[in-house]
Length: 390
Image 1 (cartoon, rainbow, N blue to C red):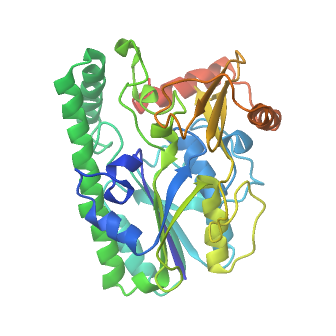
Image 2: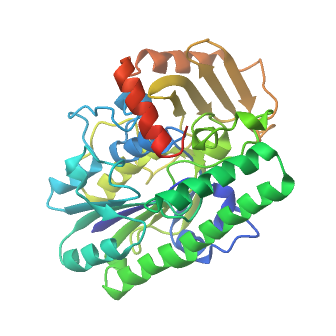
């Protein structure tokens, strides 16, 4: 059995037809969901790429693995899916949005190149088709400023600034233009990139032998949580600064022809559940993780979400339906929402169960923290600025 993990960065659930979108053409992804298992409520471990992706490939919560910025050390004792599959004879490779960022210090990921086109991934599939493989593809087509390759730095930065200025202007036409650009990027992801990927698997005779996971590392927002729109200064304020559901609820589709019957799972699950699931499907030994296999879900799973700022843990949340509680780590202030009555999280509550506080403080005690030096803080700021987050 082969395994493909395909991540569409910053993809909102409400922009896929299979999750209820009405005005976006995502037929290919919708058909993938119809033939597989779609998890209606999947929660990311963090609201931006570095910590959330590390949670996807390790099954460990962000506040436990401590990879909270691009140059953070990852404890070598933490086993990734890359290492686990490689140890059992799988060929392993990853294709990422920028080789200077994702998995840059993780040799076991075997980063083979960019995912800004899928040509490299297709070439690797052709060369590896006769050997069991684990392939990770992380594509940035749906990441702000939407469908402009990051390698085209001049145009990418200009487009990013145009999006930010549109949000700051609070102009209805500017916001609609930005959202239309996002819709187009989502459609291209589905109908060009994912469609061509599935076609290549079919052409190589691999589709029936391959488990394919489609998901996002986090969602996206457009400044709606900021009363003063001029406070939106970079990508961080679109995903990273808050832990609302438009950022932390992500699409998750698991397709394994002949292995998994089509289904919709309405119970809450977590991105940390993915690795244990893939190991079970492949018949590989289980690892100790924060997640549990998704093959049997019999109720909502408590989800922990870590918010960061410039490499520091700043927020910790528990999402346990019907409640979400967010703790500001520095101030100790709490923010709670009753999700069944207030799904858009517009009305903070003060009557959250004590159990939620107990969970958050328990998790805070177990958090992996590292106080950055001034030099490290400067490096973190530079790296985030290069990506348009600051």
